[in-house]
Length: 361
Image (cartoon, rainbow, N blue to C red):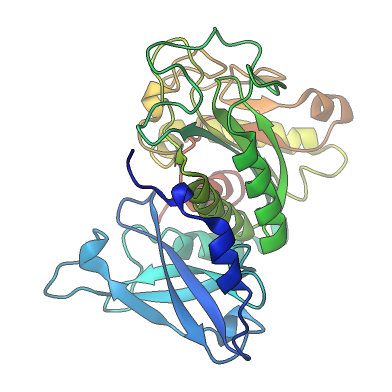
């Protein structure tokens, strides 16, 4: 059997985590690498626990090892932008989300937070709220969906969504551990459920205003990877991890502005959908790689080449929830983003199209 993290004795680790370390603490710096999807981290010692992210120092790393620089000019800089409690080391230790900048202190190619934050500042008076439903799939060490027969397939989809029972649900321990870790960290996690394909799950983050949506979702993804590491299970955000008659994995974005949430807001929502219809392809380019394998018009998706909107229709590009249509105000759901999307790009695109009408990036 191959060696993996879950084979290590966690009780032994706990003995060392209980050791005191005066006033010093560990800060784990976390960033997005050159793929735009994978995350990296490293840890440094601070003389005392930071009270705010502004107290955290800039740091650097070898960008030639993360696909972001060459060996001749490899230094990339980490700028702390958000800080969370560390559910793994606990105590006063921190998780630190960082923006990545190159040697000229300009944003790296995969640093989409920088432009997203500028857009959110411009739209501050509109009070944009977001909630993202992050779907993902658990895999065994061999890359096969966790709990699936090694030489075949489980029964057809139907009993797995929000399922209960050992023959319907695979990997709930990972899900519950992740949920609790996010609550401890301060991530605004809102819920979780088993999804339509077995070994596929979803957690929701939000409602978050502005830039916090991207920050909290990226941190929730990091925590999910770390929790799964301890269980010896892999996580994939691939938008269509299994070909055939199986659901893909998305990151549906629920979105509203202040005027959408007020009486008569349905008119603003409808105007927003009309604006989105005119920028369909610009949005799809920002909604994640491989999404064409998922957006086929089947398995609760709209076909990639056709924009559509509707009430309570999960086969539409943009869905208006039934309750919103009845109330006359609320929010819309963009069902197009893939599970692997960058939430900074998705939320920026929504605000640019519906509020600023500005794509002159």
